[in-house]
Length: 270
Ligand code: 9MG
Image 1 (tube, rainbow, N blue to C red):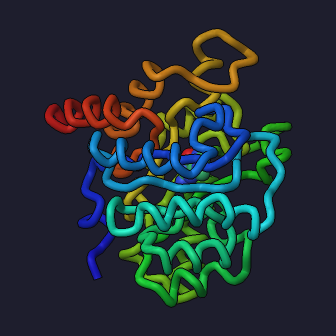
Image 2: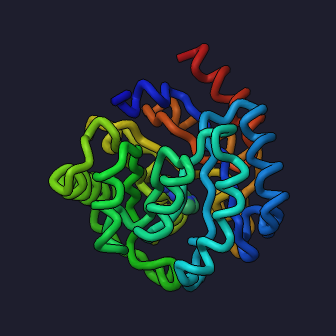
């Protein structure tokens, strides 16, 4: 088995392919399977190490979709990409992950860190897939209402350490796991920026760290729009480079070419 850090050397870019009608960050441009496939192929050409295909929105305020609906959205995309582009499946559901892995996905990106579906750990453990465990306070529908932390980086590090132990105890080898502090998932603007400043505390857990800062609303808000629901590319690139300098390995982004270029420069300096 190839450890995750060898399969995805630092920095690796993960392209976001939301097969959803209701994403703020990309306006639902990939809701049609053909568009989603074309986007994924373009991202691979632009240098993405992997594309993250998801059929359920996790933006603040969103409710869930059924496994059938999620599969209806992602299956044709996974079928068309099989053997052509490395794929990650962005899902919290065992049934969706099982089907995606059968269709060639090599990473399961679970924003609940194995707290959502009790069957998901077994699906990952019985495959040779990689796994991303992400921190979220609350659930997407309500998570931005009043997030509270005593020590944001310390609490998130402790959470991720516990979820890593849980996943390993469930049979997922540690070498296959990466950790994600979950920027924007139950965090205020100030909490997100403190977390980014202290990202080394998450990196110190010893597993590769994946970050999703691209187009996040905190970036728009720090630039002066208190109602922003997204952030611009310029701010996304600055945030990615800051995360790189603090040790992040995988960057989940919408604008692949620009992030590959920015991170190549950062890596040349680093
Ligand atoms: C699905 N999704 C949306 N934002 C994300 C982030 O920051 N990290 C991960 N792992 N997944 C995300």
